[in-house]
Amino acid sequence: MDSSTGYDISPKKKSSRGDAPYPAGVRIRGQTRPEFEKVLTREALEFVANLERKFRPRVKYILECRKEQQARYDAGELPAFDPATKSIREGDWTCTGPPAALADRRVEITGPVERKMIINALNSGAKMFMADFEDSLAPTWENIVLGQINLRDAVNRTITYEDKARNKSYKLNNKTATLLVRPRGWHLQEAHIEIDGQPATAALVDFGLYFFHNHSSFRSKHGGYGPFFYLPKMQHSREAAVWNSVFEDAEDSNGVPRGSIRGTVLIETLPAVFQMHEILYELREHSAGLNCGRWDYIFSFIKTVRAHPDRLLPDRAGVGMTQHFLKSYTELLIKTCHKRGVHAMGGMAAQIPIRDNPAANEAASALVRADKLREVKAGHDGTWAAHPGLVPLVLEVFDANMPTHHQIHVKREDVQVICADLLQMPKGQRSLEGLRLNTRVGVQYLAAWMTGTGSVPLYNLMEDAATAEISRVQNWQWIKYNAVLDGGLVSGVRVTKELFAQVLDEELVRIEREVGPAKFANGRYREAAKLFAKQCTAPVLDDFLTLDAYRSIVQFAPTARM
Image (cartoon, rainbow, N blue to C red; front, side, top):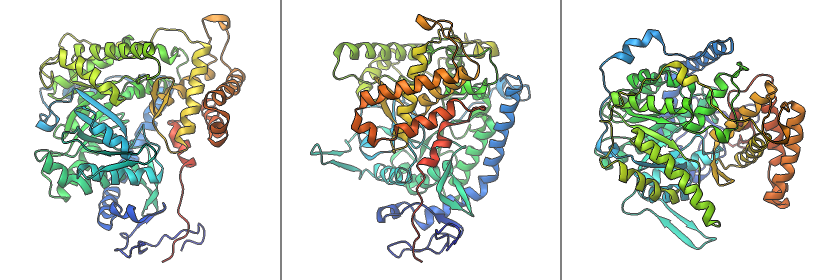
């Protein structure tokens, strides 16, 4: 017993069913229930602990490198292609080709690892489903552990769900999407699992538990390949090298052939776009290509140039994929992937079906259709859908314009992108309504996240941590540099802390009116507003909104008996 905290830290703590003790040095600080023991087994935790002990030093190193890199940007430097790795960018190497299970990825649906969502997504008609522990999931201890249980049941095809309120049962169809899993990014920790006295690396917990329990069953269903992953938030190829080593270690320690695991890297940070060849090179035996994580990319653009007052972005609604810096990013990604023989995946259109307004729904569908047509015409091999209701529309666009499983053969040699293209400032206005929308969305998303929901429909768009981050950092940037608003009656007005405080108060009134007084009173809106305001007005921009917010959802178990 640790008298300073009141929590049992003994590695010999027995589970409630009298099973084998946890491995030495492993401490579960979250509340456990009998069903949690399905995934929190001694063997699985030992596997996770071994990964942690081997790779914790490298994870700490890459995070320190991120800080050093950002310090250079803050001092005036801008991202660029690395001269030291020119030979990799200009070399003739290729990645290992995609296995049959990953050949056709024309439509992928994404969503959190919730039980009903998993069933609906796998049944949606999409080719792939990315089950998400990251941006669309609030990482409460219960969400994380139940997510692992849900995925194990999905892989074994035993997953069902009973919606008692609607008297409806859910189960898998005979034909389902192929499953991919997105673990959390390198920067996040899992506070509810401690290994040798330190919180575990969240990415290794998510990857380790899922791989350990599912690799054999998954590979038996997919021609000996898998499991398949999406890898988020990378900024440099050294981070991909750590993932590659984790994959090799997991394969070797479990008797899995090298190259079975495949990972698609989300290019969702500005520094990473200058490292795409290098990232693929590090993962080449395990690579399944790259994805345009467009929303996080916009967030990262602002965060990377946060010390550059001449780089203030316009309203987030106006920063679309036809802006030159985003068009250049996507076309360079396509060219890079196809040169290396892997998929170039498109990004998420955030629109969702609008059931109670046919005209608005058709307008939203038209936006999605145009976005997906742009992607397939540019050479993307597949794209993301935010909602099952959009899968048929997206399939129609890709089926009509991509008759083969993919278009890796489209090399896009016409694309010539230089640093200036990737750094060109987008055009558009900075408006008071943009400030209001950022504030309203940021507060509502954060309030939902703090109550365990990480994917939130707001104003006919699906908001997740990435889109909330855009709202936060754009507010911070405008306040920090007293951005001048243009358009309407407030043209010429500067954004100050005082103006933001007034806007926040007014938007809280609007939120209460929109959600209703009862829901507002029972939610965490005022707490979320306080945290959001703190982040938007901080002297130095915090790296991630969720790092600070995570403290509000950590719940340690009461003292357990030996």
